[in-house]
Length: 399
Image (cartoon, rainbow, N blue to C red; front, side, top):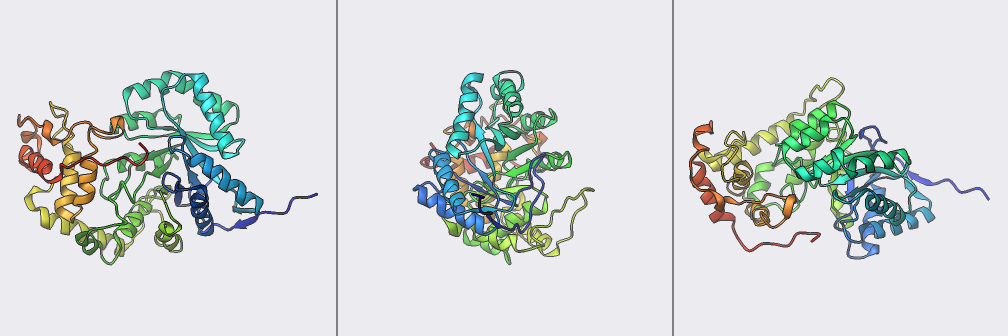
C-alpha cells in the first residue's frame, strides 16, 4: 500500500548552515520542555506550526532525546513534518574512548529513532584537554568514523572556552558548524562568528534569551532603554542582522516561541547583514535603537563603563576582568542586576562551563592599570562588582 504524502509545513525562510541542509533562523532547543513527554510534544508542534525545522538536543539534557524521539514518532504517524523534513543536532561530551563514544552516538540515534543525524557537535570544547582529545585523540577518530559510516551529515562543536581555543578549532577546516555564546550584551565572539560565516561555516547562537540576559523578564530600565523594541526582540534582530545562521530557543512552553513567530513573519528582521560580499543591510530603526541602548548604559555608568577591549589581560591572579566588569556594566548600566548576580554566583561552581575566579581573587596588584586605555580604577571596580553581585549560589538548569 503506498504511503500517504506528508502534510508539509512550508518554510517562511531558511538560512545556510555549513555544508548541510538549510535551517530556520530559530532552532528549538530541548533543554527546558522536560516536565513530561507531552510538554515537549506541545512545544514541538508549535515549532512546526511557525516554520522551525531545526532541533537541538543532547544526552546531557536528561530525558530530552527520549521525549523528542517519542514526539517525532507521533508527528510522523500524523504525517506532519516541515518541508524538507526535520534537521536535528545532537552533541557528545568530549573525553570517552572511541568505543564508548561510538556506542553513545548509536544510542543517540536509537533514542531519536533516526538512521542518520543531521549534525553532530562535540558538546563543550572548553579546555586544552578537550582540544587534545578532539584534535589528535579518540575524538578525531570518532568524527571520521561517524561521517565515514554515514551516521552524521556534518560535524561541529559547541564551546564555552576561550577565544583562542575557538579560533584554533575553526582554523582546522574540519568543522562545518559551531555553537557559540553570541549575545547582544556579550559581543566578544562576534568577530569569530563573522569570520566563520565568511568561510561557509554555520554558526548557531547559544541561548540568546536566557544566557544572553534573561531578556524574557527584563527590568524596567532595560525595557525603556530598548524601546520601541522589546529587549528580546532587539537582541534577536541584532543577531539575525549579523548573519548568524540560527538562534536557539530553549522553550519550556509553546508561548515561549511567540517572538520567533513574529520575527519569522518580518522580512526586515530576517534579512542578513552579511551576504556574499559581507555588505551590511541598512536598518535605520535597528541602528537607532542600538545607539539609544548604548547611550543609556553609558549615561548611567559614566566614566566607570568598561569598554571590553581586553587590554587588561592577562591578570596575574587569573581574574577574568572583562567578563566581571561586563556583568557590572549590565547591573549598573541597564538595571540587569538579577541576571548579573545569577551569572556571577555561578563562577567557580560550574566547572569548565564558566569562569573559575570571581572578583574576590583580585590582589590589587595594579598590573592592569597602565594597560587600560580608559584609565579605569579596575581593582576598585572589581571590589564594587563583588559587593553588588555576590550572593548565595543558584542551581544550574541541568545539574
